[in-house]
Each structure stands twice: as structure tokens, then as C-alpha cells.
Length: 261
Image (cartoon, rainbow, N blue to C red; front, side, top):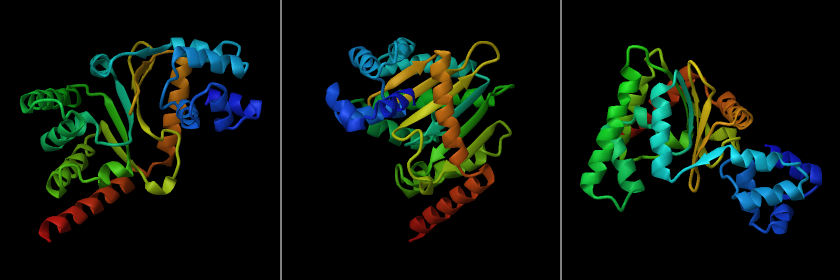
């Protein structure tokens, strides 16, 4: 958001700013949306070109970057301690709400280099994480799903129907809320990636970002506040939980028809 404001203040288009770096203007769009973090040298150059007085360079310092496996391992540590988890998912059902068949299909497609045995180990690990929601004092687990998540037939009609039925069942728990962000919303603040906000009894909030080329943990309070703002805008555009349930139920009925045909 800050990068966009600085660019507009300078009177440049994304393409014009990209030409000055130089990077493709689509990368500038991803940086502005927060879906990717610019490398340190580009962050410093953007700071200089836009007269940010060190603000953009400072933000870069407070984003923790890890190889994807290490980032997810760190995220799971935070997840296990969180008292509230707010998520926007762009592409799939969140891990804690996945069925075994759905999880197996997602991992098989995302990790084609893994053996069948390795996939089974990962599926078992994911299913074990569900204990977080079954603990005596479970966290609030509030999920906003892009409409694409409930309509894309992961694993075919049968697997998807089972997954959506499980999602509906889980949403009956007092600590689980599920909302759908409809296609009709159009462009929104979290396009292209997923955002997770983790809150704790003690200690500041943490943000976990996932995208095609980005995996990052954000702990700087100013940066966390900005990503929280992005999530809030997406949340505001989502259908209410009761209406979301009806939409999911309609998709289940459509899948029933597919299986009977």
C-alpha cells in the first residue's frame, strides 16, 4: 500500500516505475499488493527513486524469508500457540479443514517429485495438525475462501463433495467460521496469494504470506498492520457465514448431480 501511494505521488504508472528499476510492471503490481517482496537491492532502489526516506528499506528488514519448507515449519510452531487464526485462502481449503482424500490430491499435485510414501507421510502429518481444533481450548479459526476454492473440483466430484460436506460440518463448531469471497467482488486486496493472521494471548500478531514465489513470516508491527488491513478489506467483501453455508450447500448439490449423472 505504501509503495502504491508513493508511486502515485510521484506521478508514475506501474510501467514507468518498472522501467526505471528495471523490472516488468507486473512485478511492481505484485509488490504493491504485497503478494511478493522485492529483493533488497530493488527495495533500496525503490526507496531512493520514490523519496521514501528509508521507509521501504526498513520494511524489507522486518520480513523473515525462509526456504518454503523452513517457513512452513516455523508457521506450524506459531499456529500451535495461536489463540486466533484468521485466513484468506486463494486456491485451496486450509490444512486444518482438509479431508484425507483432498489433502492427498493437493499434495500429489503440488509435490510431483515426491514418492507415494513421502506423500502419505505428509498427509498423515497434516491430518495430525487437526488436533489443534480439537483441543480443550481451541483457537478461533476464521476462514475466508475465494469462491474458486469451493468450485474447483480437486480430486473429482466425489472427493470434492466429501470435502465440502466436511467444511460445512466443521463450520458448526463455535470456534470455526467459514466465509466465501464471491467472484462478483472482482479485484480485491489479496489477489494472487493467501494471507494468515495469527494472534496470541501474549506477544504481537504475526502474518504468514503464501504466493506462487513468496513464503514469508512478517513480525514488524507496522507491516503486520498493513497486511491486517488487506485481510480486513477481503473479509468485508465476503458473504456472511450463513449465506456462505448456503452457497457451499448449493455446490454440494451440484456435485451430487454430477455423481448421479
